Length: 418
Image (cartoon, rainbow, N blue to C red):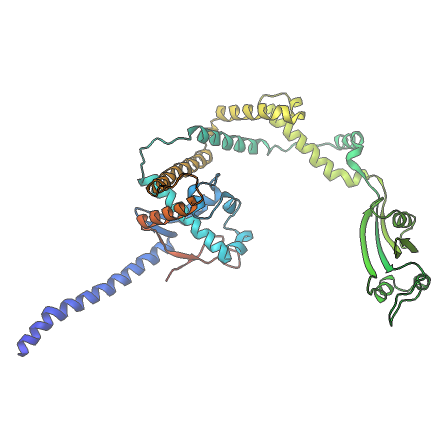
């Protein structure tokens, strides 16, 4: 009997024990492998590929230009990611729950684009080459124009003074007044009903003439329909005629009142005045220098593309001609082969291709359910297609994105999802 027990142990117990040991070893080994991937910068895995931190950086530098099916299914738009970088100014957004969801959906979009580009109908000729060519030329023009705009022209004092004299309208400022006020409801001399009715308006003015603090007197009578406070900077004619005339008759720090406007009485103190007229040249020099430098940069760009500088003055007529000449010069200089142009164009092509292939899947599901294209239920079908595709890809997000509060390191530290 004992021999049968021992034999049963060896035949059943040992294999089970070995299976448990192997299972534990596999889990530890797999956990260690995932940790190594995370430390090396891998954010997610899918069938045959991975999404890395560099993929995420490249995406944020080259976001999709148009909102199409995949983005809609992910509840993303180009505006959601345009201008976002993994830098300090964006940490507050990325630390929020919405920011975390945004980054996770971006990672999914990166994985889907890579997957469809690699596996789904890779030999299919896709439409949209004209659009891709147009996008390439837009990037070429942007790169060339940015380089031409780095030109640093010299501006002389004589040129600045001449511009100031020839364009007085650009440097004319209107007169303004900075004031504060006390307003009482009712005509001058009237007393408001109630236990703490204010004295007649003449009494308030007498106190102000004696030098009592304007703000304190105003606060004392700020009850009911009465008000007191800063009026701010106002231009001539912006207020009621009687108030406006009284204000513009004052010298700085002078007080006037009572001024009747309808059923209200006002006391006004002028705090500061900005005279109307030409702004002194010394105050305009910085603005003039910027204007002249930009004008010279524009002339430099037009000359560089072979157009007469005078054409720059007529924006509506010259813009299209300038853009054509800019693209021609970019081709002549080989900008279509520049790495940044090729990378951006290839990213755009992959977005286009992935969206067309994804849309095919959506339309297949629409046909299967006898739903016409463009129906209100499209978004449900797009979402369902997205989930089916992610399941097919065996998509796995490896990390949570915990952005550091210090902002000293713009990299994305991760902690493994449990």
